[in-house]
Length: 178
Image (cartoon, rainbow, N blue to C red):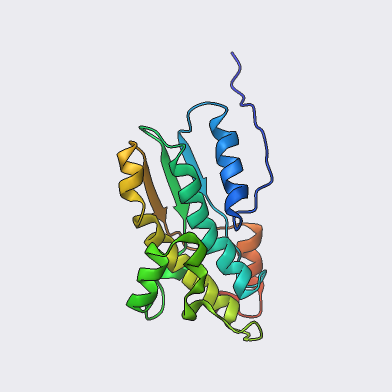
């Protein structure tokens, strides 16, 4: 009996919808997709505010939209957010609405997402917004996913012991940025 798995890799830019769509089609070409775990994100110490929003926020929207066409009864997509998205005073209602429902091409166009690239706190703010926007964005397509028998969920863990997580804790901002 062979207990192993055949693994095929593919480089994907989650901030590029067409790249994610190609990945979704490639995955579906191997048979029914049972689970998609979307973990892409950048910590404040490793990316600019703009890149953090592109990967963490737009990347989530791209994955949700690209994989819904591949979903079928029982398909489950889990998008990993962060407790950082639930800290602080919260997001303004208008921004929450934008993060949840704006069409993908306009998602990053909201004025609150125009973070000054030289602001030293910009990456941490972008991280909090992107991780707070993740659960909001996941709520928007539940009907489309449910219509085909699939489901989507968002999980908000605390710091995970990964290379990026340890790097963030050891950065000058330390625990205050996550």
